[in-house]
Length: 278
Image 1 (cartoon, rainbow, N blue to C red):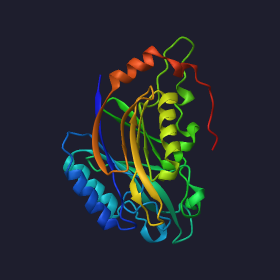
Image 2 (tube, one colour):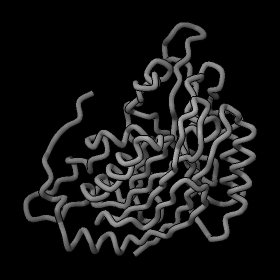
Image 3 (cartoon, rainbow, N blue to C red):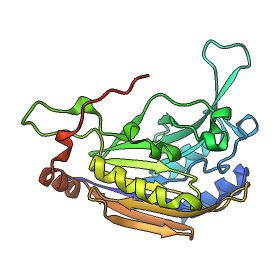
């Protein structure tokens, strides 16, 4: 059975200062002491959770994506985290641009996948500045399948649910769609109980590992973030959590241990069938 190592970077962020954030994050990445395969950064890691994409968003040839390509190649790792992305509207008028809270899954060879945040946080007017994504992104690494989501998506369990299209005929074993569920976030301390509870629920109900990487410190709106980045196993046991402090933490997850839980407790085969409508 395979193993996969993740490094979680929980950090304060410089408000709307890309250069300062990229320099700070590179220093933290250079400080990693243990071998790792995937580095996970918070939501909008280069700006903080800002509603100014018109001034700060980049296209896929921008400085931040190029930075991710360079670091991934130099360190021979996969990097992931979200940023403000700009994209010309297909078939739109000249100069029309859409903005996305876009998670990047950057491979060492420079190839990448993207996931555009599906659930926009209307409470902070995110829906007024960004367009919602429509497709999930599930990556495959070293025998693991990884479902990648962003912050507010955590409150919507159907979007993360192991797909009913994988339900087997009666008597056959369920083949899960993914093994690890990752949330990158800027989740405020004032709602941290919901963060911790929902991360645990997603792990238990989907019988998967869950990784949540959150920021620390006050943002430009003076909203405090306590971090509470977590790694949780399929039984809901917390394997790692860090509160308030910045941290760079590496953990290795076992596919064998996950399969043991799923084989002993084959609950997924009894899941309800459903479809997500466009």
